[in-house]
Length: 160
Image (cartoon, rainbow, N blue to C red; front, side, top):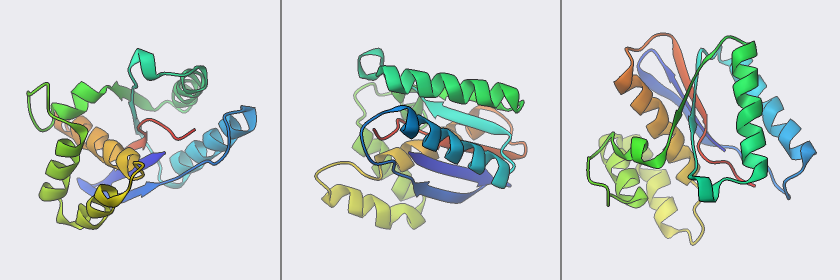
């Protein structure tokens, strides 16, 4: 799970949270507990979710997104969902722009992300990808909507 939090126009938190093991109801509850904890601790007012394409969406991910949407409505939070093309639009209109190109552009614009970006390049299995997508989600939201309060993107597709 990628987490990114903007506070007063500044990226204040960016991290990865993993939930090990196979998908089950216990894992769903653990993730929802963590989301609720983040909402309460950081006084979240907005949630941005990165939508996966239909062929990448599992039953578990669909249920999780449904539960997060329900939680957001119950807590009266604004919720926005973006797909990969939406995220890419922050950098270019080029349809063939890759995720790696997007992450590189993000790191170039935000030098404090160079370390994580360089680590990601060395890994055979993506690790920081979710965090980068979370950051891009909140930056896209900020670009599309005047900033107000705290904007959070706790998800961009989740680990299973």
